[in-house]
Image (cartoon, rainbow, N blue to C red; front, side, top):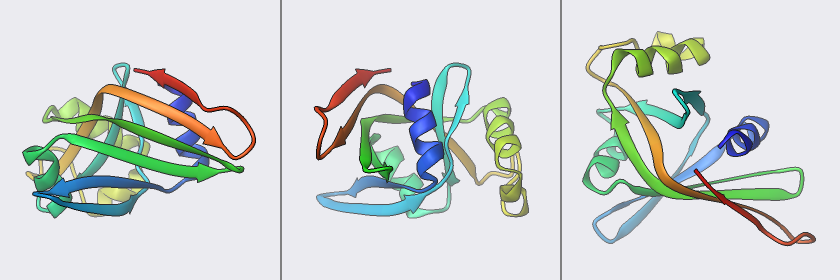
Length: 130
């Protein structure tokens, strides 16, 4: 998991794919945090992405840096605890202008049963789970 987190931090931006019915949706994200041994992302509960994840938690993210890319697939599980929200907002203080713990909108999701694959055009893929 640490390797996936480090890759996402280095890339800066990753793309999260969800579904709404049978329609895929992809959008850029930048939040990634490790809390209590789990990889978390953050969004707002009022956003369509949160509603899509609550309806179907299967998701995938993809990021590229240094000629390599990572794909992480798994389930994103909502963690409603204040401690998890605070950890994310402490890691990204610039979000505090839009979000706060227990504001009814801050949503942090962690990966469960995740598989990550790091690929490039020159090296064989490396796959690991967390």
